[in-house]
Every structure is written in structure tokens, then in C-alpha cells.
Length: 116
View 1: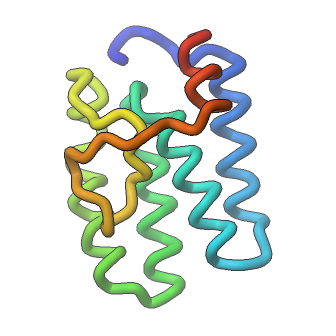
View 2: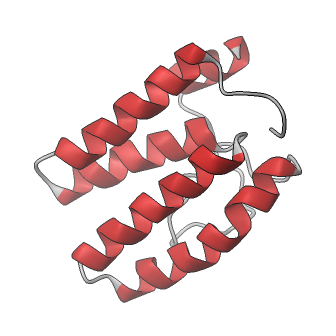
């Protein structure tokens, strides 16, 4: 959200998920943490974009061309979408999910975001 900083509690959860994604021992766990970080970051342009950059980097490391291409597209639209409040809530941010497809938000993240 433009002009509205990410609340400290939300930022801490976002950073924890991003850190967990970097340190997870297997690829599926890394994606799971990045997906959770994506849901948290959607309302804020820079964290949302940074999350897609991390997803792109993981896709490249795993040599997943489809995912990498999908992340390039998402990197381009993440900041404007967040700034304008036009993002599909709960969307995990992966290339296998449509850009505009809303998804259920996990209960713990829904509670966190509602408190923001």
C-alpha cells in the first residue's frame, strides 16, 4: 500500500518466511515459505516485488524455465498491482497459478493481515 509502511509484526513474519525459504533443506519447503511470504507481502509494493525476485532466483537455481518466465512477468506487475490495491488475495505467486486468481488465505496469515 502506497504510503503505508508494513507493520512491524507483519514485517517480522515476512522476514521469517523469507529467511526460512533461504535456509530450508529441500526445494518444496523453500517454495512453501516463499508462497507464504508472498501472501503476506501482497499489499506492499517493494516486499511483494522482492518476493517474486526470490521466486525467480529459486526457479533459475532449479532450472525451471516455466516458473522463471512466470516470475519475470510477476516481477513486472507486482509493484503496480500492490500500489493500486489490485492483487488477488491469497494467491501464492507461483507461475502455475493464474495472475488474477484469488485463493484461500491460511488462517494464521489471515489473522496476521487482519491485524495490520
